[in-house]
Length: 95
Image (cartoon, rainbow, N blue to C red):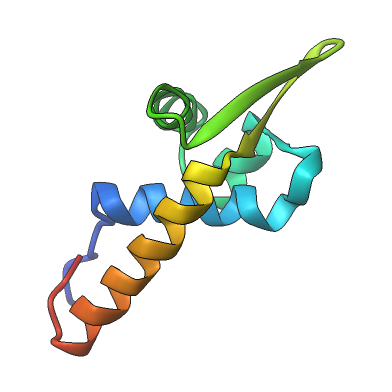
């Protein structure tokens, strides 16, 4: 039986940004982000707060819900990160 491979920090960030991009401009709530990115609720909160701090996402509060949307800077970062991931996968480096 082989040992399970864990995602890197970069892999987790990529997964979160991918979830946010897929949801569109209406945003995504944290519980949905956690479920779709396969993270615990608290890990998702921590990562999303970091991404907001870096300006890659924004937090929008509507009534009682808190949604996250991707910024233009976040879109550019995600696109560059995807190019980098494709490049390292081509040379078989684990990210």
